[in-house]
Length: 225
Image (cartoon, rainbow, N blue to C red):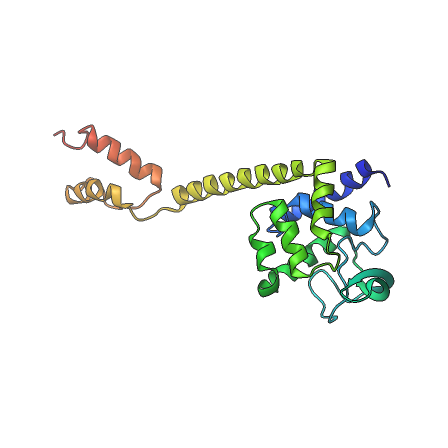
């Protein structure tokens, strides 16, 4: 598979996972999928080298596995080949989201990965956490990020998250305006005066209603005979 084709398929999924609360920077996640798969999407959809481990199922992994030969670095024998079970997924999105659970469910081990402030720092934290046995894992990730300009996906995800946060803020303000029933503190004096004068019998309404009362009160509309 050509790099452009691989990225056209995997990058949108990586960005979506980041937006939904994923731990890894998109650039780091993409570099990891490239390093782990060699620019291929395996039929079992495991892009991150996630082994079967204890076998405990999750929301995104129902227990399917595949046995594969992989290379592992050791302290005493160098790099060796071993056969081990890897998780098999229904989709690449499930693979990426299952990895998020791995990080979040093991904060003692992956805390530095979660808290990393930059892609380079996160790549080094992945190596230090023992996610992979290759001592050059961090440098390989950062090299891939640099070579293919993958940090552009970090910017894309950040811009989308900022836009969503602004939308949530605006929706919260709108909801507060619609659902307001009791007068807010800044309208209390006006409402009390109107109730006392018999000009307002039901001091309830939305924020725009109370704002209009305050504006009229400041203009002296309620002081006229």
